[in-house]
Length: 95
Image (tube, rainbow, N blue to C red; front, side, top):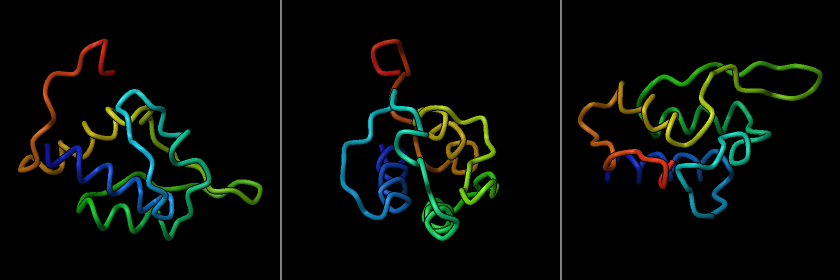
């Protein structure tokens, strides 16, 4: 469960400490829309693994990755942090 807890906390950091539930099926764009490079870097530092770069287009920052949901982000972090356990199986009900 540590992986889920750490990613949820990192998302809160990226959102400026807004404390809402983080559900696996939620799209990252809904949680991280308008993330700034400073908050993205803080999220990356907290997770201790590389995150994809942000791209600046017409006055806005955008993620450049293929990560669509929180589960995708969990899988990405798990590849870099094998010491953090993935939460149970991902199935239709949780994804």
